[in-house]
Amino acid sequence: MLQTAMRYSHTLLKEVIQAGDTVVDATMGNGNDTAFLAQLVGLNGSVYAFDVQEQALQNTEKKLVESGVREQVRLVHQGHETIATIIPKETTLRAAIFNLGYLPKSDKQIITKPDTTKQALGALLARLESKGRIVLVVYYGHTGGEAELAMVQNYCQQLPQEEYSVLTYQFINQKNNPPILFCIEKK
Image (cartoon, rainbow, N blue to C red; front, side, top):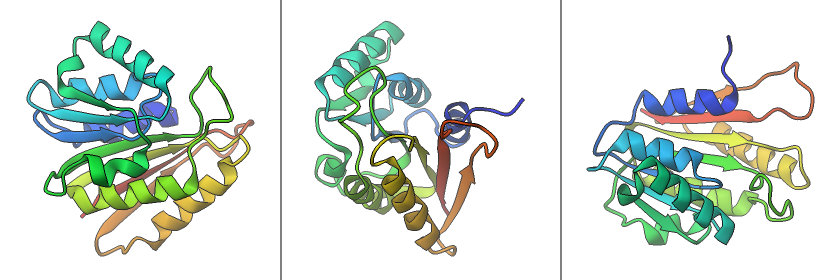
């Protein structure tokens, strides 16, 4: 059976993340990806998790405590455009994930935006290790979503193939704008 974009994002990350790595959840949301990453990096690794909404931090904190992985996570109550200032320049990253759109079961007016996502991607690529991956799951069925999808697609297409491989994964026969996954791997 084919995996959903969310499940496939975890498969792609699990293939490269090892205990002790440093990784980023650029959009912590309800904490599912943050907890998943924290389990993969273990106690000696670290996860930087970003979100602008207080509700996201509370939901994520609760999930991390329940999962027993709170210790290795740094929750950052700021947008992912601040990655360059929060994560030290000398820190190398094994992986990062974005779920672009809005926080499920919350204010649908608060959405990720093309300009801040582009800033975050630049900061992550500058710190990404060889064989590291950045996964973006783009939910675009809301106002502003199409513009962000276009930016991500264009950004990924412009990456030099000598340095990066980029994969897209999507279901093309489903209704209601199924999410599209992008995976950038540094060579």
